[in-house]
Amino acid sequence: MAPLLPPVGAEVFRRFTPASLEEIQRRHEAEEREQQSRKEQKIEIAEEDLPKPASDLEAGKPLPFIYGDPPPEFLNIPLEELDPFYQSQKTFIILSKGNIIYRFNADPACYLLSPFNPLRIFSIRILIHSYPLSFSSSW
Image (cartoon, rainbow, N blue to C red; front, side, top):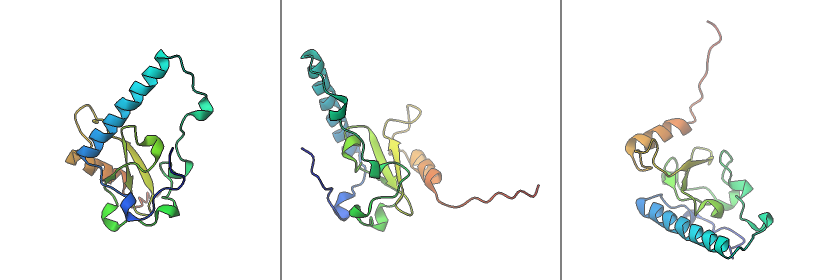
């Protein structure tokens, strides 16, 4: 059974590493095997009993106060997923300025850029940058 309250403090935030990705793949494979065995045994699970993503950890929302402020070294870098729903899926998060959550797929982009590729990391930083663009309407 999942704990009712998430752990608090800086120990919650862990960098997303190749070892993290391997662990996610192991969890994903175990979950697929479990689903396959349920299908073979013809066990139906009600839709209400299926896990759902936490509404307070949605992408685009600020990090809930219960997690506290992440250390500055954990901003704008790939981190392991905080939401238990996504922990067995190939995703990682990035916290930007203002503790806004961004969620990204950990599969290779364009079939060749791993999540650890410097070009992909640079592209993600450009994407989440909070510099306001002002467009002048005086053409």
